[in-house]
Amino acid sequence: MSLEQAIKAKAREIGFDLVGMTTADPLPEAEAAYHRWLDGGMHAGMAYMAAHRDRIGDPRKVRPEARSIIAVAMHYYAGEPSPPDGDVRGRISRYAWGDDYHLVMERRLRDLAAFLTQRGAHLARYYVDTGPLPDRAIAQRAGLGWCGRHSCLITREFGTWVVLGEILTDLALTPDDPAWGDCGLCTSCYDGTEACPTGAIVEPGVVDARKCISYWTIEHRGWIPRQVRPTLEDMIFGCDLCQEACPFNRRVRPTQHPEFQPRPEIGTRPLLLPLMNISEAEFGRRFRRSAIKRARRSGLRRNVAIALGNLGDARAVPELAIALRDPTDPVVRGHAGWALGRIGGAEATAALEGARRAESDPRVCEEIATALTDG
Image (tube, rainbow, N blue to C red; front, side, top):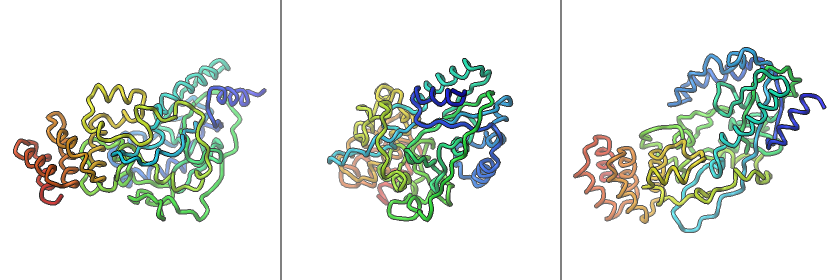
């Protein structure tokens, strides 16, 4: 068995579904695309993305001694969400149904890196969205899949439902052939009834974070612009719409990895009312080892308030009224006020009027006034 075969066998034994190898040579096309994306301001408030500008296209600028890259993927699709049951529920991305994939993959990558060290590697540095590397471009050059018009990596085995990682190593490994493919004439992800509703896919392979539901519900901190809020619908963490529209995902079987199965504390469509005023302790307990912790408690409550306002269910008014009086978080208060205005009715109006008399934060006062005037 060659070294390359031994590494692939070990990777599959550890639990990776796909593994490929490529060189640590520069990726000029990925670098140019990344620079265009940054220059267009499409990274929105993610300043850390710009910090990688000068290294993103050359793995050797990350680790000069790197000679090869091992790219891996895990399949996380756990089926379809539960059907509506009459309760007030929200949507979250499938990758957040189970354990945080960063933690799931890091443990396996650490084991694979140790295997490389045992085989003579002096460098075995692994990453899961944690380094200045163009994951999808590396995965494509290593033969795992190709990038579709929605910008996601498309694999023949698992469609787009994969999470990616890589290891930089100083071992000289024979590279795999790059993956090739295209979307043909399909434009389902950005042009059709199932397309991205916010127009975030501004051109094939390019997503503008300023229009992306995943950005607003996960990465963005603080206030969400009023005009953006209705576009989030009932989504409280991430968005799968462009992937759901992709024909390559229609025949994908559910993953066998137990870590990606829906957790009882989260499920596939979380109940929203218990989340609106969730305590810090309960947030930490319920979302331990979950990707949802990335949104933080304040961000999740803000997102829940928006979803409740968009759903317009009067059952949410008591919980929103409590949030409107939360002295610790003006962002949550402001979004709760907006949601009450959207729902309307005597109870919601009474809550808003009472809060207006007690509120001192100018931004929250503006939200309350607008809610009372415009709904």
